Amino acid sequence: MIRVGDEIRETLASGGAVVALETTLVAHGFPPGEGVAVGLASELQVRAAGAVPATVGVLDGEVRVGLTEAELARFDVSARKAGPRDLAAAAVQGAVGATTVGATLAVARATGIRFMATGGSGGVHRGFPHPPDVSADLGELARTPALVVSAGVKSLLDVPATAELLETLGVPVLGFRVDTLPLFYGAAGGPPVSARVESAEEAARVAAAHWELGGAGLLLGRPPDEPLEDVEPLIEAALRAAEAEGVSGQAVTPFVLSYLHRESGGRTQEANRALIAQNARLAGEIAVASTLL
Ligand code: PSU
Ligand code: MN
Image 1 (tube, protein in one colour):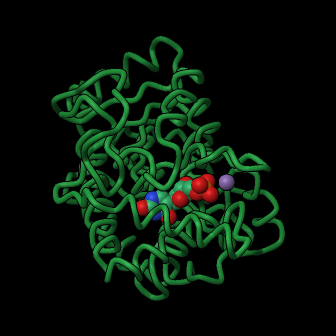
Image 2 (cartoon, rainbow, N blue to C red):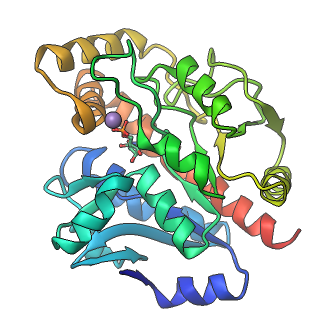
């Protein structure tokens, strides 16, 4: 069911550094045709740090760990967004399944990968709508022994509620050289982290200790190098538009991201692109640091 690329399998077997990457942001996080470059840039950043990228997606009846460039290009807007619940059906039905953070973590758990990178993790959607919408990313963080490097939780969500739920689930929320959780585009104003770390090596040591204690996932928030601090009014407008158009469930995040990209004149898109690459680089550095402990 799961096919792991040769380089990734060999690296894992020898205790080397591997970083899992998702495909939902490739297929649904950017305008058509632009996600592939973001995915490739993430892979390059992981390699620049000295680690091996493992991009995950469902293709041709298998869960694939490691994709060629041509394979990555098949994760376009027609791909199914695959959360953890969708992996099996997408594979059996031969669909192209673009994996979320949660689904990528599920595959990491099955293959022994301990690190991944994304833009922003999913969480509790705002206003506790009916029906409630809580990303499956949280459930997988609660059970997968892996560290996820992100710019925190996507700020279109209810970030304080997500932080509380992460605490309930026992998921450490680490801040990379910051005391508060980054807000995806923005760096400031998020809830406090449970611990601050100053280096990739310290993050690797905390993760290793957490796993030794029987813990599972950790979320590490790295603020974007060039944050956008004024996106909140646009986010509120985007969420109102989503509601007015009856957009719900898995479609909300892609709808809001594309609304922001359009209405900000591309500024949120550029910020999103840049922070994904920065997170991939740091995840690679932490994966490498963990092999040296
Ligand atoms: N980070 C980004 N862009 C994205 C995502 C993360 O910069 O599109 C995706 C991830 O795949 C994450 C998903 O798992 O958004 C969360 O979606 P939902 O809220 O529907 O669970
Ligand atoms: Mn959801």
